[in-house]
Image 1 (tube, rainbow, N blue to C red):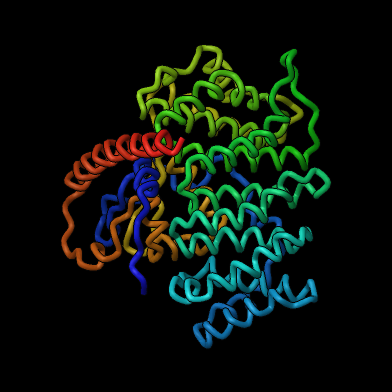
Image 2: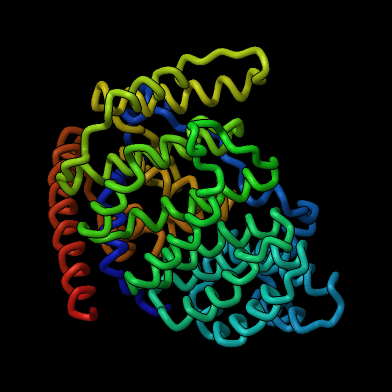
Length: 435
């Protein structure tokens, strides 16, 4: 198996999540300690929800270890088929294989052929095929887990034209908006390309910004879903920005533009806007921005949404909104952070930041039940969440008590924060030299 090479930016991303702790004999770490074990408080919709899955029995057959490489080759070859249903079946097989198993060698050896076929599927622009191809493309990049600007440009050029095409269905564009964010997040190291993509995403969700008179624009439900997906990808890419770019984005979007989206009549867009605000200010505090403190008007709005009760909203919608905005409001007024513990195998992933939760919700929406498999085996995903190197984990035989682990976590967090500042500064310097 080729050794995974960590990216500098992956180290920066991992600065927002606590390192792992072993769960094996930890009797003091139970799910009943008051810490949330929910993977997504905003109850965001997984992209699995929009794609019809095969029967459980069929999935088991696909995932059986017998002739796994043959199944992979057959599925990739199936993408060449002229019959639409055959291509969709091949994409579903790849989606199941890529999400539920970690296959770095097998996929790396077939990456050129697979890339060519996925791009062809994406460019066709058929709704059902395109949505499946967008999902498979994202998980394909998670499997590769390495920066590749040439690959990013190829996939971007296949995704972006359809994302911008207003004649295409909003549902298809939503899938492409989700995919292009992950593709850039994983594969691109070029800051200018990331910034340009963020501008393209803003063009989409800005149509939900408040109008000049402060009123909420009238937007169809399907377009609101697209705006939500574009904002989520924009937020994901925001977390990769070096200090100078992050500061400019915070100054431009934190005071009014993103907060205005909280007034949307779409629950998902409201909640995504709230979580984006939380990430914006979390980064602002991290880089010591002069905009690190929210204005009083924003706090009033967040408090209102945390306690809002209107008859025309459903019970679940109100419950999720209140929980989301209560947590965001408390993070400003009480200095609290999200706390999630995800147990997998003999480890526990502890997430204690808005950025870390953004990552977890995003990747788990793609990988579904395969998230734990990738957390355990995928070097790229482990680096995103600052989990121990696989080699170190295999060789580790002793455990300290809980207090010692907490102290080690604090020291590691401080070290990662310092590394993050250095990485962002280096990126800014390289960008200036290129200009």
